[in-house]
Image (cartoon, rainbow over all chains, first blue to last red; front, side, top):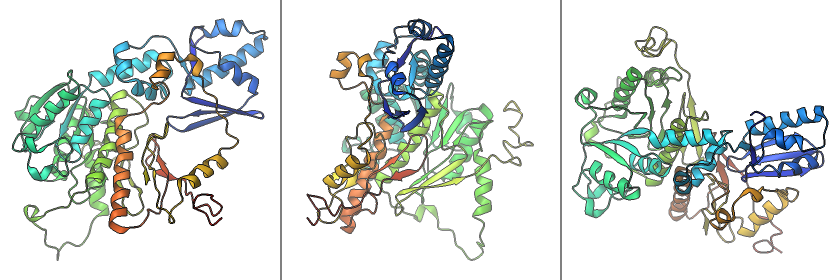
Length: 370
Length: 120
């Protein structure tokens, strides 16, 4: 903030002045800031409507220079904490009219309207690749359209089957036999005509990234379960590490339907390989007397609200990444929603210095600009 | 009755299942909030909002569709659990914050003095 900033008290902030304390409550994100401050000062903040510069506003007050400095410091603090926003631009009208609540949420993390618009522009211009259009992938895709994403790459070789309809949102009886990518592509364009979709009716196998022409991707979300989530995660993880693309292991966990995987930001967070090694260590058991069940003989139950809950967390995290927000919670972490406790159980782990991919001797360490 | 949504700025609330004679009733919840928030008198800066935005009721809340998807998912799980077990969830109203991955529950209990469901 500087003296030319035009500050506006954000309407979603509740101000509660009591005795010598004033609470600023950011109602969207339930964040509370309490300052020891006279109520007469908080009353003045209601004058901030974004029309005057800070210096114009302070100078019209009959106060001495020390008090002016204190005021400036207070306004700067409240601006940095999203109580006040710098009204430096008018939002793009079409964007704001279509996504007012997304803009209001972004304002909780950003101190200037021009930066809020830039953040939304990033979302709007980003391209997201989603691998696996099933119980989780479909909800994630539709949620991201509703948050402003307009470019997608969808990957899934499957055709819609009647047995998909009771657990995978977005498909109808009339879609039976059509490819999932074509049905979802049409659905997204029906939601918003500007949406652009590239469809790949391919398995995610060892050759996928060499056979297909994927470009300009900002984020890849894995929701694929075939042949296993371990295999698809490694393929996506390695491609993304090579190309420095953020990725989320969102779904596809066959026997852990409520599991939500990690957000990986190359060069910053634990990668898929870090997790693999860590999980191998903590899951090490004597397998000599255990027969592995052939996965083709394994029929797994599915519980749609659990899948949509996983999708909700994955889509939230994707939004934060695309918007450039710093409040990602699923990096260095995977979580499971516990049905009995009705809460999340988080497994935390840090980036490993001995990781074959991102560790100090890892094959992608140098590529990461270290 | 399941109170699933409509919480103005509670973006990832869990809502609560109301089972007559078993769970706290709506009035128990209302009384709880009236009591705990009796000294909390918030003021909002509605002066800076154009009338058109107020009429459209679209000025105050920031949210994402994926946040609502959490509340929907939770509600469906709680409702199916009720049908399957004929029992209430041990948790009532809670809230998942966007910046954390933990649901904070309010632990509101049945008010024995409630004029609707209490013993009086």
